[in-house]
Length: 560
Image 1 (cartoon, rainbow, N blue to C red):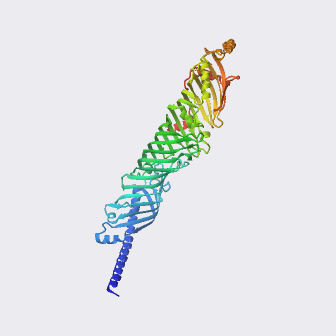
Image 2 (cartoon, rainbow, N blue to C red):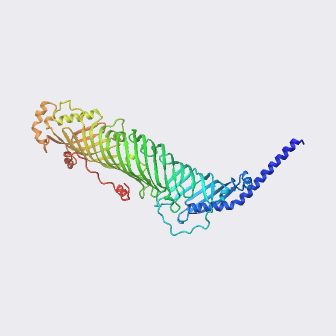
Image 3 (tube, rainbow, N blue to C red):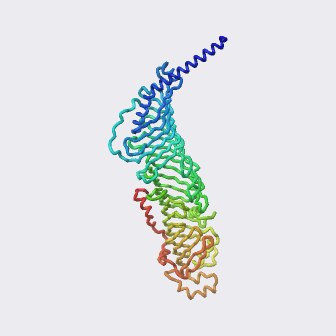
């Protein structure tokens, strides 16, 4: 064997012996440090979370360079890689509660020298299968618990925690209710020290509407006695959420904002935009934008909205109320109070009624209480509305219907041939109730130049059917409304019969047919509700009606 080959063989053998020696030292040091590191890991976690910790498996592995660093540098810079499996946490203050935190696997690196000094330096911690179940805030322990016998001997500073796939559940006070669940697809926590808040970056998976919420902010310090009271704040960005998963509506939602509070209850201020919001029963997209303040209460799963400033098309309105779960119901009830101060009738009708062109245009004042109980049916069938409204300077977009009103105004003023009376605006106010896809108008007052009417009736969305009965009061006498001279002379003798209450003509009428083809005529059977006659004299919107029973119940619970 040549000298060169012999040198290679002995060099390889030397390297092999060194590697074998380092491996042996690594195993030796791993076994020597493992009991201490296991004890300190459990002690730190129990002290940090004030919990009883059970750890099924903990392993310590030394990289090849670490044994040499231990020998040469007396441990300085030597790293140990620690991994564990099946770890559970049970709060000492709530021994009757089930396990509040579990991890399937974890791993981290620690500077061995620092582990024996006053502050252990831990590098990136990786957690797999982390699940937290936060008990309701305010629960008190049945009795004072004793301090754990083994307290950590050193403080711990963690540079970073990676916990992708975390599941966070906020347990409600009522055991019959489902917890508020957050699926966190990606989670990063930075600069974790005892008594210090953590900076986080998270991506949450939102179930309904589906999408990803990107959030950054601050979490902690950890509240061991009441985990749900741990401080939480940050900013969020939610984009391209498909609203069509909710039966009856559609559109793409984008929302941004900030929040602060605690894990179990936090407040949020933000803005949401749906450029193509629509009700599926009409299919007409219209832009919707909101600026809101919301309170999310994880203890009962309710969301309180107060206030919400919204804009639908060109209409602005304010909303307050709650999205809450009631006893015996599967799902949540939407319970809101909305006021349109600068509304446009065409915006609302475009959203609610089929067809690319709204039947009416004009100003709108509206106060409505909205109740949408949970269920599988169409929104139009489940939605319940109670309120009052006022239409200002309204006009029909259907030329034929508007022409009928123009003719009505001409005749009502005793000028049936005056073509200058054209595109006459009109006013309307009333009280309405909607349920089961049908709108019932308890009181409906109509006014146009020369005439007033008080009526009651209904509109059915499915067939677009009209059914109204009322009484009209006209300034002109019956004969003055006729188009030809001979009819005027013919009807003059009957003018006194229809002249009542200081008006030239008073008569009962009805409106039937459909929205596209309405039929106007005299009601020979008389108005169905004579009590509405007095409403025509004073066209002012009535006071809001009493709220539905469940809406009152929401207020009783302290919601808006």
